[in-house]
Length: 591
Image (cartoon, rainbow, N blue to C red; front, side):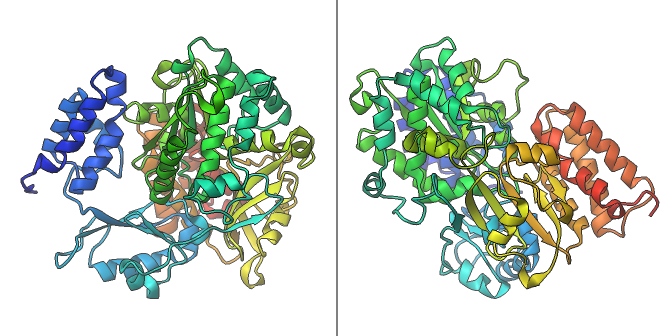
Protein backbone atom coordinates (compact mmCIF):
# COMPACT_ATOMS: atom_id res chain seq x y z
CA UNK A 1 0.00 0.00 0.00
CA UNK A 2 1.33 3.46 -0.86
CA UNK A 3 1.48 5.83 2.09
CA UNK A 4 0.86 9.58 1.86
CA UNK A 5 3.55 12.11 2.69
CA UNK A 6 3.57 12.87 6.41
CA UNK A 7 3.71 16.45 7.65
CA UNK A 8 5.31 16.45 11.10
CA UNK A 9 4.48 20.09 11.85
CA UNK A 10 1.32 19.11 13.78
CA UNK A 11 3.33 16.80 16.04
CA UNK A 12 6.33 19.08 16.55
CA UNK A 13 4.90 21.34 19.31
CA UNK A 14 4.01 18.28 21.39
CA UNK A 15 7.49 16.81 20.99
CA UNK A 16 9.16 20.13 21.84
CA UNK A 17 7.09 20.41 25.02
CA UNK A 18 7.96 16.80 25.82
CA UNK A 19 11.65 17.54 25.38
CA UNK A 20 11.43 20.49 27.79
CA UNK A 21 9.64 18.45 30.45
CA UNK A 22 12.07 15.55 30.10
CA UNK A 23 15.25 17.61 29.88
CA UNK A 24 16.59 16.17 33.14
CA UNK A 25 14.80 12.83 33.01
CA UNK A 26 16.57 9.49 32.93
CA UNK A 27 15.93 6.77 30.39
CA UNK A 28 13.14 5.10 32.38
CA UNK A 29 11.20 8.34 32.72
CA UNK A 30 11.58 9.08 29.03
CA UNK A 31 10.47 5.64 27.97
CA UNK A 32 7.45 5.82 30.28
CA UNK A 33 6.10 8.59 28.05
CA UNK A 34 5.94 6.29 25.02
CA UNK A 35 2.28 5.26 25.31
CA UNK A 36 1.07 8.88 25.76
CA UNK A 37 3.21 9.99 22.81
CA UNK A 38 1.84 7.25 20.57
CA UNK A 39 -1.75 8.04 21.55
CA UNK A 40 -1.22 11.73 20.85
CA UNK A 41 0.39 11.08 17.48
CA UNK A 42 -2.35 8.69 16.42
CA UNK A 43 -5.00 11.24 17.38
CA UNK A 44 -3.35 13.63 14.90
CA UNK A 45 -2.75 11.26 11.98
CA UNK A 46 -5.18 8.38 12.52
CA UNK A 47 -2.25 5.98 12.39
CA UNK A 48 1.47 5.79 13.20
CA UNK A 49 3.60 6.12 10.06
CA UNK A 50 7.35 5.56 10.15
CA UNK A 51 8.35 9.28 10.10
CA UNK A 52 6.17 9.85 13.18
CA UNK A 53 7.73 6.91 15.00
CA UNK A 54 11.21 8.15 14.09
CA UNK A 55 10.41 11.59 15.54
CA UNK A 56 9.10 10.02 18.76
CA UNK A 57 12.20 7.80 18.91
CA UNK A 58 14.48 10.84 18.77
CA UNK A 59 12.45 12.74 21.36
CA UNK A 60 12.33 9.90 23.90
CA UNK A 61 15.69 8.25 23.12
CA UNK A 62 13.88 4.93 22.61
CA UNK A 63 15.20 2.67 19.83
CA UNK A 64 12.95 2.68 16.78
CA UNK A 65 12.85 -1.13 16.71
CA UNK A 66 11.46 -1.13 20.26
CA UNK A 67 8.77 1.37 19.29
CA UNK A 68 7.72 -0.76 16.33
CA UNK A 69 7.44 -3.71 18.72
CA UNK A 70 5.16 -1.74 21.04
CA UNK A 71 2.94 -0.49 18.19
CA UNK A 72 2.52 -3.99 16.80
CA UNK A 73 1.69 -5.42 20.25
CA UNK A 74 -1.38 -3.24 20.90
CA UNK A 75 -4.45 -3.72 18.71
CA UNK A 76 -5.57 -0.08 18.97
CA UNK A 77 -2.34 1.27 17.44
CA UNK A 78 -2.16 1.21 13.65
CA UNK A 79 0.94 0.99 11.48
CA UNK A 80 -1.14 1.21 8.30
CA UNK A 81 -3.47 4.09 7.31
CA UNK A 82 -6.64 4.21 9.37
CA UNK A 83 -9.32 6.83 9.93
CA UNK A 84 -9.10 9.13 12.94
CA UNK A 85 -12.67 8.14 13.77
CA UNK A 86 -13.15 4.42 14.38
CA UNK A 87 -16.48 2.69 15.04
CA UNK A 88 -16.16 -0.46 17.16
CA UNK A 89 -18.89 -3.03 17.75
CA UNK A 90 -18.64 -5.55 20.59
CA UNK A 91 -18.63 -9.31 19.92
CA UNK A 92 -18.63 -10.64 23.48
CA UNK A 93 -21.23 -13.23 24.57
CA UNK A 94 -23.54 -10.70 26.26
CA UNK A 95 -23.72 -8.57 23.11
CA UNK A 96 -24.16 -11.65 20.92
CA UNK A 97 -27.09 -12.79 23.08
CA UNK A 98 -28.73 -9.37 22.70
CA UNK A 99 -28.56 -9.26 18.90
CA UNK A 100 -25.10 -7.85 18.35
CA UNK A 101 -24.62 -9.67 15.05
CA UNK A 102 -27.65 -7.92 13.52
CA UNK A 103 -26.38 -4.55 14.75
CA UNK A 104 -22.93 -5.25 13.31
CA UNK A 105 -24.48 -6.16 9.96
CA UNK A 106 -26.49 -2.93 9.97
CA UNK A 107 -23.38 -0.84 10.71
CA UNK A 108 -21.48 -2.58 7.92
CA UNK A 109 -24.32 -1.95 5.49
CA UNK A 110 -24.60 1.70 6.51
CA UNK A 111 -20.86 2.34 6.24
CA UNK A 112 -20.26 0.06 3.28
CA UNK A 113 -17.26 -1.65 4.94
CA UNK A 114 -16.34 -4.84 6.73
CA UNK A 115 -14.09 -5.42 9.74
CA UNK A 116 -10.83 -3.47 9.45
CA UNK A 117 -12.06 -1.30 6.60
CA UNK A 118 -12.37 2.46 6.10
CA UNK A 119 -15.66 3.89 4.86
CA UNK A 120 -15.48 5.32 1.33
CA UNK A 121 -14.71 9.01 0.81
CA UNK A 122 -17.54 11.50 0.63
CA UNK A 123 -17.23 13.00 4.08
CA UNK A 124 -15.29 12.24 7.23
CA UNK A 125 -13.43 8.94 6.88
CA UNK A 126 -14.68 6.26 9.30
CA UNK A 127 -12.85 3.08 10.27
CA UNK A 128 -14.76 0.04 11.44
CA UNK A 129 -13.82 -2.91 13.66
CA UNK A 130 -15.44 -5.83 15.44
CA UNK A 131 -13.76 -6.14 18.84
CA UNK A 132 -13.78 -8.79 21.60
CA UNK A 133 -15.22 -6.67 24.43
CA UNK A 134 -16.03 -3.04 25.18
CA UNK A 135 -16.84 -3.46 28.87
CA UNK A 136 -20.48 -2.34 28.51
CA UNK A 137 -22.22 -5.69 28.97
CA UNK A 138 -25.14 -4.12 30.84
CA UNK A 139 -25.95 -2.13 27.68
CA UNK A 140 -25.67 -4.99 25.20
CA UNK A 141 -25.45 -4.68 22.24
CA UNK A 142 -22.80 -2.00 22.76
CA UNK A 143 -20.61 0.04 20.43
CA UNK A 144 -18.17 2.95 20.37
CA UNK A 145 -18.13 5.72 17.80
CA UNK A 146 -14.74 7.25 18.45
CA UNK A 147 -14.95 8.24 22.11
CA UNK A 148 -18.76 8.17 22.19
CA UNK A 149 -20.32 5.01 23.74
CA UNK A 150 -23.72 3.64 22.82
CA UNK A 151 -25.77 0.82 24.27
CA UNK A 152 -29.00 -1.12 23.77
CA UNK A 153 -28.57 -0.66 20.04
CA UNK A 154 -30.95 -2.11 17.49
CA UNK A 155 -30.37 -2.31 13.73
CA UNK A 156 -33.00 0.38 13.21
CA UNK A 157 -31.08 2.80 15.45
CA UNK A 158 -27.76 2.43 13.63
CA UNK A 159 -28.20 5.54 11.40
CA UNK A 160 -28.95 7.64 14.49
CA UNK A 161 -25.90 6.18 16.23
CA UNK A 162 -23.56 6.86 13.31
CA UNK A 163 -25.03 10.33 12.93
CA UNK A 164 -24.05 11.26 16.49
CA UNK A 165 -27.62 11.72 17.70
CA UNK A 166 -27.99 8.50 19.69
CA UNK A 167 -27.90 9.20 23.46
CA UNK A 168 -24.94 8.04 25.52
CA UNK A 169 -25.79 5.50 28.25
CA UNK A 170 -25.99 6.61 31.87
CA UNK A 171 -25.53 4.22 34.79
CA UNK A 172 -27.44 1.15 35.90
CA UNK A 173 -26.62 0.65 39.56
CA UNK A 174 -28.86 -1.41 41.83
CA UNK A 175 -28.84 -3.15 45.20
CA UNK A 176 -27.77 -1.62 48.47
CA UNK A 177 -26.77 -0.63 51.04
CA UNK A 178 -24.43 1.57 49.04
CA UNK A 179 -21.20 1.95 50.96
CA UNK A 180 -19.14 2.55 47.81
CA UNK A 181 -21.55 3.42 44.96
CA UNK A 182 -23.82 5.84 46.79
CA UNK A 183 -22.73 8.89 44.78
CA UNK A 184 -23.22 7.26 41.37
CA UNK A 185 -26.05 9.06 39.63
CA UNK A 186 -26.35 11.51 42.53
CA UNK A 187 -23.46 13.87 41.76
CA UNK A 188 -22.02 15.52 38.69
CA UNK A 189 -18.95 13.37 37.95
CA UNK A 190 -17.12 16.42 36.63
CA UNK A 191 -17.72 18.59 39.68
CA UNK A 192 -15.24 18.55 42.54
CA UNK A 193 -17.60 20.82 44.47
CA UNK A 194 -20.38 18.22 44.19
CA UNK A 195 -18.03 15.52 45.39
CA UNK A 196 -16.90 17.53 48.40
CA UNK A 197 -20.46 18.54 49.30
CA UNK A 198 -21.30 14.82 49.36
CA UNK A 199 -18.50 14.18 51.87
CA UNK A 200 -15.64 13.74 49.47
CA UNK A 201 -12.08 14.10 50.81
CA UNK A 202 -13.30 14.25 54.41
CA UNK A 203 -12.18 10.65 55.02
CA UNK A 204 -8.62 11.00 53.76
CA UNK A 205 -8.23 14.34 55.54
CA UNK A 206 -9.31 12.73 58.80
CA UNK A 207 -7.02 9.71 58.34
CA UNK A 208 -4.01 11.86 57.47
CA UNK A 209 -4.48 13.87 60.65
CA UNK A 210 -5.29 10.87 62.87
CA UNK A 211 -2.66 10.36 65.63
CA UNK A 212 -2.74 6.62 64.83
CA UNK A 213 -0.80 7.43 61.67
CA UNK A 214 -0.34 5.21 58.61
CA UNK A 215 0.15 2.10 60.73
CA UNK A 216 -3.24 2.66 62.33
CA UNK A 217 -4.92 2.87 58.94
CA UNK A 218 -3.24 -0.33 57.76
CA UNK A 219 -4.24 -2.12 60.98
CA UNK A 220 -7.88 -1.06 60.48
CA UNK A 221 -7.87 -2.32 56.91
CA UNK A 222 -6.27 -5.58 57.98
CA UNK A 223 -9.10 -6.12 60.46
CA UNK A 224 -11.70 -5.18 57.85
CA UNK A 225 -11.18 -8.39 55.90
CA UNK A 226 -11.05 -6.60 52.54
CA UNK A 227 -9.54 -8.90 49.93
CA UNK A 228 -8.56 -8.00 46.37
CA UNK A 229 -11.74 -7.53 44.33
CA UNK A 230 -10.11 -8.26 40.97
CA UNK A 231 -10.14 -12.01 41.50
CA UNK A 232 -6.85 -12.76 43.27
CA UNK A 233 -8.35 -12.14 46.75
CA UNK A 234 -5.04 -11.14 48.35
CA UNK A 235 -5.57 -9.39 51.72
CA UNK A 236 -5.47 -5.63 51.21
CA UNK A 237 -3.95 -4.77 54.58
CA UNK A 238 -1.15 -7.30 54.12
CA UNK A 239 -0.23 -5.95 50.69
CA UNK A 240 -0.11 -2.38 51.98
CA UNK A 241 1.92 -3.45 55.03
CA UNK A 242 4.48 -5.30 52.91
CA UNK A 243 4.93 -2.33 50.60
CA UNK A 244 5.20 0.15 53.44
CA UNK A 245 7.92 -1.98 55.00
CA UNK A 246 9.87 -2.43 51.77
CA UNK A 247 13.16 -0.52 51.44
CA UNK A 248 12.89 2.78 49.60
CA UNK A 249 11.91 6.40 50.06
CA UNK A 250 8.39 7.69 49.31
CA UNK A 251 9.72 9.01 45.99
CA UNK A 252 10.61 5.39 45.11
CA UNK A 253 7.20 3.87 45.90
CA UNK A 254 4.07 3.65 43.77
CA UNK A 255 0.31 3.21 44.03
CA UNK A 256 -1.32 1.80 40.89
CA UNK A 257 -5.05 1.60 40.22
CA UNK A 258 -5.49 -1.31 37.83
CA UNK A 259 -8.39 -0.09 35.69
CA UNK A 260 -7.69 -2.41 32.78
CA UNK A 261 -10.74 -4.61 33.28
CA UNK A 262 -11.04 -6.14 29.82
CA UNK A 263 -12.78 -9.45 30.34
CA UNK A 264 -16.21 -10.20 28.84
CA UNK A 265 -18.83 -9.74 31.52
CA UNK A 266 -16.83 -7.25 33.60
CA UNK A 267 -17.77 -3.57 33.69
CA UNK A 268 -17.88 -2.60 37.36
CA UNK A 269 -14.82 -0.36 37.49
CA UNK A 270 -15.93 1.54 34.40
CA UNK A 271 -19.15 2.60 36.13
CA UNK A 272 -17.29 4.06 39.12
CA UNK A 273 -14.71 5.87 36.98
CA UNK A 274 -17.33 7.40 34.71
CA UNK A 275 -19.78 8.40 37.42
CA UNK A 276 -17.68 9.08 40.55
CA UNK A 277 -14.05 9.55 39.47
CA UNK A 278 -12.99 11.66 42.46
CA UNK A 279 -13.64 8.74 44.81
CA UNK A 280 -10.89 6.77 43.07
CA UNK A 281 -8.48 9.70 43.44
CA UNK A 282 -9.30 10.01 47.14
CA UNK A 283 -8.90 6.25 47.64
CA UNK A 284 -5.48 6.33 45.96
CA UNK A 285 -4.45 9.27 48.14
CA UNK A 286 -5.46 7.26 51.21
CA UNK A 287 -3.36 4.35 49.96
CA UNK A 288 -0.38 6.64 49.31
CA UNK A 289 -0.51 7.98 52.87
CA UNK A 290 -0.79 4.51 54.39
CA UNK A 291 1.99 3.00 52.28
CA UNK A 292 4.27 6.02 52.16
CA UNK A 293 4.27 6.54 48.39
CA UNK A 294 4.53 9.71 46.32
CA UNK A 295 3.68 8.31 42.88
CA UNK A 296 0.20 7.34 41.69
CA UNK A 297 -0.77 5.75 38.39
CA UNK A 298 -4.12 4.83 36.88
CA UNK A 299 -3.80 2.37 34.01
CA UNK A 300 -7.11 2.31 32.15
CA UNK A 301 -8.04 0.23 29.13
CA UNK A 302 -8.14 2.00 25.77
CA UNK A 303 -11.78 1.01 25.21
CA UNK A 304 -12.88 3.29 28.07
CA UNK A 305 -12.49 6.73 26.46
CA UNK A 306 -15.28 8.40 28.43
CA UNK A 307 -13.90 7.18 31.75
CA UNK A 308 -10.39 8.28 30.73
CA UNK A 309 -11.56 11.80 29.90
CA UNK A 310 -13.44 12.15 33.17
CA UNK A 311 -10.49 10.85 35.19
CA UNK A 312 -8.11 13.26 33.43
CA UNK A 313 -10.42 16.16 34.23
CA UNK A 314 -10.74 15.01 37.84
CA UNK A 315 -6.96 14.80 38.24
CA UNK A 316 -6.52 18.35 36.95
CA UNK A 317 -9.28 19.64 39.22
CA UNK A 318 -7.72 17.92 42.24
CA UNK A 319 -4.33 19.43 41.42
CA UNK A 320 -5.81 22.91 41.12
CA UNK A 321 -7.50 22.45 44.50
CA UNK A 322 -4.18 21.26 46.03
CA UNK A 323 -5.65 17.84 46.70
CA UNK A 324 -2.82 16.38 44.65
CA UNK A 325 0.73 17.67 44.73
CA UNK A 326 3.05 18.56 47.58
CA UNK A 327 2.32 19.22 51.26
CA UNK A 328 -1.18 17.72 51.19
CA UNK A 329 -3.70 18.32 53.98
CA UNK A 330 -1.34 20.50 55.94
CA UNK A 331 1.32 17.80 56.18
CA UNK A 332 4.57 19.26 54.76
CA UNK A 333 6.06 15.81 54.13
CA UNK A 334 3.03 14.23 52.43
CA UNK A 335 3.42 14.49 48.66
CA UNK A 336 1.34 12.57 46.12
CA UNK A 337 0.35 12.99 42.49
CA UNK A 338 -1.32 10.78 39.90
CA UNK A 339 -0.50 10.04 36.27
CA UNK A 340 -3.12 8.60 33.92
CA UNK A 341 -2.00 5.99 31.41
CA UNK A 342 -4.31 4.85 28.63
CA UNK A 343 -3.87 1.32 27.31
CA UNK A 344 -4.33 0.40 23.67
CA UNK A 345 -6.15 -2.89 23.48
CA UNK A 346 -4.36 -5.69 25.35
CA UNK A 347 -6.22 -7.75 27.95
CA UNK A 348 -2.91 -9.13 29.22
CA UNK A 349 -2.10 -5.71 30.69
CA UNK A 350 -4.60 -6.46 33.43
CA UNK A 351 -1.96 -8.84 34.79
CA UNK A 352 -0.03 -6.67 37.21
CA UNK A 353 3.49 -7.27 35.91
CA UNK A 354 2.39 -6.85 32.29
CA UNK A 355 0.83 -3.58 33.43
CA UNK A 356 4.24 -2.45 34.73
CA UNK A 357 5.79 -3.22 31.36
CA UNK A 358 3.09 -1.20 29.59
CA UNK A 359 3.55 1.87 31.79
CA UNK A 360 7.31 1.59 31.31
CA UNK A 361 6.83 1.83 27.53
CA UNK A 362 7.31 -1.81 26.57
CA UNK A 363 5.19 -4.63 25.25
CA UNK A 364 2.81 -5.89 27.91
CA UNK A 365 4.57 -9.18 28.57
CA UNK A 366 4.13 -10.62 32.09
CA UNK A 367 7.21 -11.00 34.26
CA UNK A 368 8.24 -14.12 36.12
CA UNK A 369 7.49 -13.96 39.86
CA UNK A 370 9.20 -13.76 42.31
CA UNK A 371 10.26 -11.04 42.87
CA UNK A 372 6.86 -9.64 43.77
CA UNK A 373 5.51 -6.12 43.22
CA UNK A 374 5.58 -5.17 46.90
CA UNK A 375 9.37 -4.99 46.59
CA UNK A 376 10.07 -5.01 42.83
CA UNK A 377 7.15 -3.53 40.93
CA UNK A 378 7.01 -0.52 38.64
CA UNK A 379 10.57 0.48 37.67
CA UNK A 380 11.59 -2.42 39.97
CA UNK A 381 10.51 -0.33 42.98
CA UNK A 382 7.99 -1.14 45.76
CA UNK A 383 4.48 -0.96 44.32
CA UNK A 384 0.90 -1.48 45.46
CA UNK A 385 -1.43 -2.63 42.68
CA UNK A 386 -5.14 -2.73 43.48
CA UNK A 387 -8.11 -2.67 41.19
CA UNK A 388 -10.61 0.17 41.39
CA UNK A 389 -13.20 -1.61 43.52
CA UNK A 390 -10.60 -2.69 46.07
CA UNK A 391 -9.29 0.84 46.54
CA UNK A 392 -12.78 2.28 46.90
CA UNK A 393 -13.67 -0.46 49.40
CA UNK A 394 -10.67 0.62 51.52
CA UNK A 395 -11.94 4.20 51.45
CA UNK A 396 -15.39 3.01 52.53
CA UNK A 397 -13.96 1.09 55.49
CA UNK A 398 -12.14 4.17 56.72
CA UNK A 399 -15.26 6.29 56.21
CA UNK A 400 -17.86 4.13 57.97
CA UNK A 401 -15.60 2.33 60.45
CA UNK A 402 -14.97 -1.32 61.20
CA UNK A 403 -18.21 -1.97 63.07
CA UNK A 404 -20.49 -0.77 60.27
CA UNK A 405 -18.40 -2.50 57.59
CA UNK A 406 -18.26 -5.85 59.38
CA UNK A 407 -21.95 -5.68 60.28
CA UNK A 408 -22.65 -6.45 56.62
CA UNK A 409 -21.81 -9.64 54.79
CA UNK A 410 -20.59 -12.77 56.56
CA UNK A 411 -17.97 -13.45 59.19
CA UNK A 412 -15.36 -14.49 56.64
CA UNK A 413 -16.56 -12.15 53.88
CA UNK A 414 -17.46 -8.84 55.52
CA UNK A 415 -18.80 -5.76 53.79
CA UNK A 416 -20.25 -5.33 50.32
CA UNK A 417 -19.24 -6.55 46.88
CA UNK A 418 -19.93 -5.39 43.34
CA UNK A 419 -21.52 -7.90 40.96
CA UNK A 420 -21.86 -7.41 37.20
CA UNK A 421 -25.11 -8.99 36.01
CA UNK A 422 -25.62 -9.40 32.27
CA UNK A 423 -27.14 -11.75 29.73
CA UNK A 424 -30.68 -13.01 30.20
CA UNK A 425 -31.86 -10.93 33.16
CA UNK A 426 -34.52 -8.22 33.14
CA UNK A 427 -32.29 -5.56 34.74
CA UNK A 428 -28.66 -6.02 33.75
CA UNK A 429 -26.37 -3.69 35.63
CA UNK A 430 -23.92 -3.22 38.48
CA UNK A 431 -25.15 -4.42 41.87
CA UNK A 432 -23.62 -3.52 45.22
CA UNK A 433 -24.85 -5.98 47.84
CA UNK A 434 -23.55 -7.51 51.07
CA UNK A 435 -21.68 -10.78 50.75
CA UNK A 436 -23.90 -13.76 51.54
CA UNK A 437 -26.75 -13.58 49.05
CA UNK A 438 -27.29 -16.63 46.88
CA UNK A 439 -26.91 -16.72 43.14
CA UNK A 440 -30.65 -17.29 42.87
CA UNK A 441 -31.36 -14.19 44.96
CA UNK A 442 -29.06 -12.10 42.76
CA UNK A 443 -30.87 -13.21 39.61
CA UNK A 444 -34.23 -12.49 41.25
CA UNK A 445 -32.95 -9.07 42.31
CA UNK A 446 -32.19 -8.44 38.65
CA UNK A 447 -35.81 -9.18 37.73
CA UNK A 448 -35.37 -12.83 36.84
CA UNK A 449 -35.24 -14.29 33.35
CA UNK A 450 -37.22 -12.53 30.58
CA UNK A 451 -40.26 -14.41 29.37
CA UNK A 452 -40.28 -16.60 32.48
CA UNK A 453 -37.83 -18.95 30.81
CA UNK A 454 -35.61 -21.24 32.89
CA UNK A 455 -31.93 -20.80 33.65
CA UNK A 456 -29.72 -23.13 31.63
CA UNK A 457 -26.28 -21.87 32.69
CA UNK A 458 -24.52 -19.06 34.52
CA UNK A 459 -20.96 -18.01 33.76
CA UNK A 460 -19.37 -17.09 37.07
CA UNK A 461 -16.18 -15.04 37.36
CA UNK A 462 -16.00 -13.89 33.73
CA UNK A 463 -14.45 -15.42 30.62
CA UNK A 464 -11.78 -16.97 32.84
CA UNK A 465 -14.39 -18.37 35.23
CA UNK A 466 -16.64 -21.44 35.32
CA UNK A 467 -20.11 -22.35 34.17
CA UNK A 468 -22.63 -23.52 36.74
CA UNK A 469 -26.01 -25.11 36.16
CA UNK A 470 -29.46 -24.47 37.67
CA UNK A 471 -28.79 -26.97 40.46
CA UNK A 472 -26.17 -24.55 41.85
CA UNK A 473 -28.35 -21.46 42.04
CA UNK A 474 -28.35 -21.65 45.83
CA UNK A 475 -24.58 -21.14 45.95
CA UNK A 476 -23.77 -18.49 48.55
CA UNK A 477 -21.91 -15.53 47.07
CA UNK A 478 -19.17 -15.20 49.63
CA UNK A 479 -15.54 -16.29 49.61
CA UNK A 480 -16.26 -19.31 51.78
CA UNK A 481 -19.49 -20.13 49.96
CA UNK A 482 -17.79 -20.02 46.57
CA UNK A 483 -14.94 -22.22 47.81
CA UNK A 484 -17.37 -24.76 49.18
CA UNK A 485 -19.25 -24.88 45.87
CA UNK A 486 -16.10 -24.90 43.75
CA UNK A 487 -17.23 -21.71 42.01
CA UNK A 488 -14.96 -18.72 41.34
CA UNK A 489 -16.21 -15.30 42.42
CA UNK A 490 -13.53 -13.72 40.26
CA UNK A 491 -14.25 -10.05 39.71
CA UNK A 492 -17.97 -10.54 40.36
CA UNK A 493 -19.27 -11.53 36.92
CA UNK A 494 -22.69 -13.21 36.69
CA UNK A 495 -23.66 -13.81 33.06
CA UNK A 496 -26.96 -15.66 32.68
CA UNK A 497 -28.01 -17.90 29.77
CA UNK A 498 -31.59 -19.10 29.48
CA UNK A 499 -32.80 -22.47 28.23
CA UNK A 500 -32.99 -21.37 24.59
CA UNK A 501 -29.25 -20.73 24.20
CA UNK A 502 -26.94 -23.03 22.27
CA UNK A 503 -23.82 -22.90 24.43
CA UNK A 504 -21.44 -24.06 21.71
CA UNK A 505 -21.22 -20.63 20.02
CA UNK A 506 -20.71 -19.10 23.48
CA UNK A 507 -17.72 -21.37 24.05
CA UNK A 508 -16.34 -20.37 20.66
CA UNK A 509 -16.73 -16.67 21.52
CA UNK A 510 -14.85 -17.17 24.78
CA UNK A 511 -12.09 -19.11 23.03
CA UNK A 512 -11.84 -16.42 20.35
CA UNK A 513 -11.35 -13.82 23.06
CA UNK A 514 -8.39 -15.66 24.61
CA UNK A 515 -6.84 -16.47 21.25
CA UNK A 516 -7.05 -12.77 20.36
CA UNK A 517 -5.63 -11.64 23.70
CA UNK A 518 -2.78 -14.11 24.27
CA UNK A 519 0.45 -12.13 24.34
CA UNK A 520 2.43 -15.01 22.85
CA UNK A 521 5.24 -14.96 25.40
CA UNK A 522 4.78 -18.61 26.43
CA UNK A 523 4.01 -21.43 24.01
CA UNK A 524 1.32 -23.25 26.05
CA UNK A 525 -0.93 -20.19 25.90
CA UNK A 526 0.10 -18.96 22.46
CA UNK A 527 -0.52 -22.30 20.76
CA UNK A 528 -3.17 -23.64 23.13
CA UNK A 529 -5.57 -20.70 22.78
CA UNK A 530 -5.34 -20.88 18.99
CA UNK A 531 -5.93 -24.63 18.88
CA UNK A 532 -8.82 -24.36 21.36
CA UNK A 533 -10.44 -21.72 19.17
CA UNK A 534 -9.95 -23.78 16.00
CA UNK A 535 -11.66 -26.81 17.52
CA UNK A 536 -14.56 -24.80 18.96
CA UNK A 537 -14.99 -22.97 15.67
CA UNK A 538 -15.55 -26.32 13.99
CA UNK A 539 -17.83 -27.51 16.80
CA UNK A 540 -19.98 -24.37 16.79
CA UNK A 541 -19.86 -23.03 13.25
CA UNK A 542 -18.53 -25.62 10.81
CA UNK A 543 -20.57 -28.77 11.00
CA UNK A 544 -20.02 -29.98 14.53
CA UNK A 545 -17.36 -31.96 16.39
CA UNK A 546 -15.35 -34.84 14.99
CA UNK A 547 -13.83 -37.78 16.79
CA UNK A 548 -11.02 -36.70 19.09
CA UNK A 549 -12.21 -33.09 19.61
CA UNK A 550 -13.28 -33.65 23.20
CA UNK A 551 -10.00 -35.32 24.20
CA UNK A 552 -8.04 -32.58 22.42
CA UNK A 553 -9.89 -29.85 24.28
CA UNK A 554 -9.28 -31.58 27.60
CA UNK A 555 -5.59 -32.07 26.85
CA UNK A 556 -5.15 -28.47 25.68
CA UNK A 557 -6.98 -27.14 28.71
CA UNK A 558 -4.90 -29.21 31.14
CA UNK A 559 -1.64 -28.16 29.48
CA UNK A 560 -2.48 -24.46 29.46
CA UNK A 561 -3.68 -24.56 33.06
CA UNK A 562 -0.59 -26.32 34.37
CA UNK A 563 2.20 -24.78 32.31
CA UNK A 564 1.28 -21.25 31.19
CA UNK A 565 3.36 -18.38 32.54
CA UNK A 566 0.56 -16.15 33.84
CA UNK A 567 -3.08 -16.14 34.79
CA UNK A 568 -4.33 -15.58 31.24
CA UNK A 569 -3.12 -18.94 29.97
CA UNK A 570 -3.78 -20.65 33.28
CA UNK A 571 -7.49 -19.78 33.07
CA UNK A 572 -8.05 -19.58 29.29
CA UNK A 573 -9.68 -23.01 29.29
CA UNK A 574 -11.53 -22.79 32.62
CA UNK A 575 -14.96 -21.97 31.20
CA UNK A 576 -14.63 -24.51 28.39
CA UNK A 577 -13.52 -27.31 30.72
CA UNK A 578 -16.33 -26.58 33.18
CA UNK A 579 -18.89 -26.67 30.35
CA UNK A 580 -17.56 -29.96 28.98
CA UNK A 581 -17.75 -31.51 32.45
CA UNK A 582 -21.28 -30.27 33.10
CA UNK A 583 -22.75 -30.81 29.63
CA UNK A 584 -20.81 -33.65 27.96
CA UNK A 585 -23.08 -33.61 24.91
CA UNK A 586 -21.71 -30.23 23.85
CA UNK A 587 -18.65 -32.08 22.53
CA UNK A 588 -19.29 -35.81 22.87
CA UNK A 589 -16.50 -38.38 22.81
CA UNK A 590 -18.01 -40.09 19.76
CA UNK A 591 -20.03 -37.60 17.65
